[in-house]
Structures are given as C-alpha cells and as structure tokens.
Amino acid sequence: AFTPNGDGNNEMFLVQGWGLLSVNLEIFDQWGTLLFSSNDQAKGWDGMYKGVKVKNDMYVYKATVKVLSGKVVTKTGHINVLR
Image (cartoon, rainbow, N blue to C red; front, top):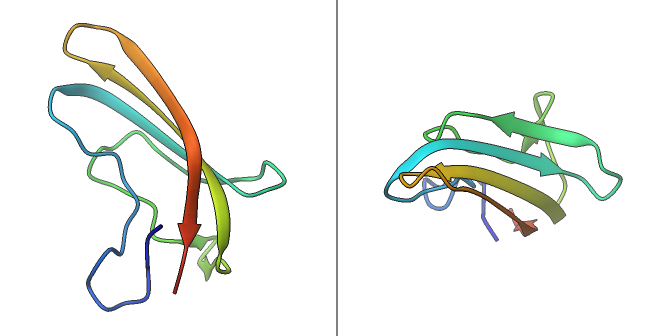
C-alpha cells in the first residue's frame, strides 16, 4: 500500500533497486484501464489519473525490468491506495 495524501511520506509507488538497466512500470484499474505508465525509474505513480485522485482501492501493477546480466524480469501484483 501507499498513501499519496500530501504528508510527504510514502507518496509514490515506484520501482527501486540496484543494477536495473531499464524499468517499465504500469498501473491498471480493476477493469484493465491503464492509469499510469513510465519508463523512468525515478518517476513513480502518485495515485492520480488524468489529473484526478483515484479512489481508495486496489490496483494492479506490472513492472518489467532489465538487470545487469541482461535478463528481463516481469512482476505483477496488487497495490492499495490509502489516503
């Protein structure tokens, strides 16, 4: 879970790690609508979609990273937005 509520703590959901050559992060709602996408490891999802705060709910993430060995790893899971 993350809490994008403006208090300065836990404001972004992003991929972090050492030795990542490339990162692609995608966030989807329960109907499969793409809410966020970024290829910039420093840019995370702030809980907004088209300039509007999303509701407190569960969302799906898909993170695809390329590591130093050249291997591409894809992870999917759920992230909760709690304001």
